[in-house]
Length: 422
Image (cartoon, rainbow, N blue to C red; front, side):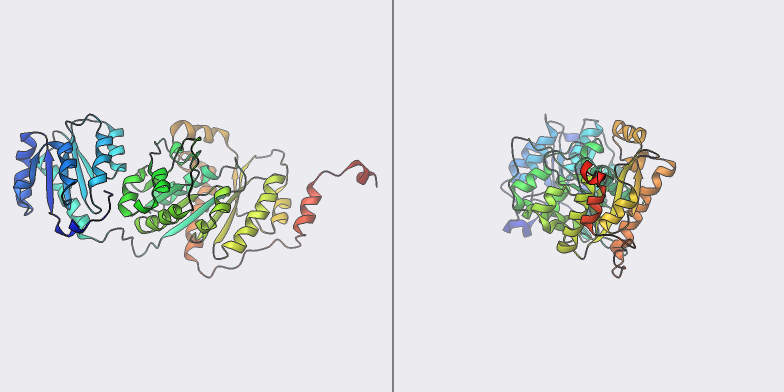
């Protein structure tokens, strides 16, 4: 849970419980004794009593709260978070059998939710897991999996950068078996949570409004879990409320995600790239998503030049997205590559059926796609992982015989009648 550190934190009890009924209390006390905890720490009163008591006393290492008498469990848990000190592991119980409530509670920062009636063995297992977390170092990632951070940047709106970012995050979690965070930095119109059929929550807006609150426990409470390995931090801030920030919150979020996850995918709108250039400084890979149009060609040139000047250490992967098979292109791939003076690394074909199916199911396209459609997704994931671990990669290859950028762009523009006649 997330609240400011206090001097009394060093005087913490190992365990405290607040329950609503005698049956739960009678089950808890002998299990507490088994773990060497005082049975007198099992109190009556449920969550409301927990909030009142912890507002004037130190939080325990492990806190058990009963939500049975709570009319709004999610809001009450958030109130509990305000009085719990960092490091407290919260285990909740209740009689509401609702998967969405369970997900929301876990996203709010609780360790587990036990549905009543639960057994003594379930209680022992939950406490054992909580003690394992307490005894081990927090946020330690596996030594053979150094952190990977990828920034996905669309050169223009509508090129599908968010779709690719969501799929990449899912692939890093499901296929590469990495704990992964998806940070959607389009605060007002982000689709990271929407694409995964999740409610975005207030985590990102809270972070922007109160950067000082951001720490590891805040990340646990604010992130919305999509599955076992993928968590999302997104927002749908009211469009009549501009987010005023100097970018400190974004930097701190990146830091905490680096400590808590093995991979981070930033869905980075191009206007955020300009306003907060430090966002890509720690990214191992920048995935630049474009389409084969004149406007996208111009903006790809500009963004590649910006990355070269502002983040020369970041490996760049250029993606051409939504390319129709056999259809007419505004600009050919060859002309596009000559204009940007480097090859396109991956081409994603346009497939309206897969896109529609993914949207209806609330799943990333990489999960829904089958057959040959999966190839570019897997290639992207492999390139991100290999580029992130390859410190001595060769410099970007230029297309042989490339003309100047201005000449290439001019050659694509329609000629005037006077010049054509000449």
